[in-house]
Length: 55
Image (cartoon, rainbow, N blue to C red; front, side, top):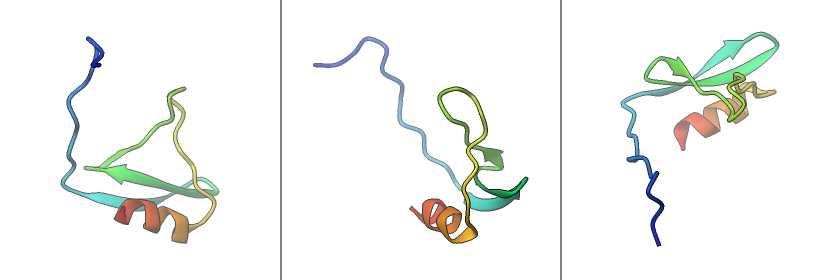
């Protein structure tokens, strides 16, 4: 069953970890990712941010 509001999958050319405030975030094609509440995603360690960016 498919939803009538499905969005096409997005593919990004670059994914990188970047410092943000007291933590780290992921940038996809230079744009930081956000939570469903539109807040910036802040990760506690660079290692975690690097692992997510590599995924």
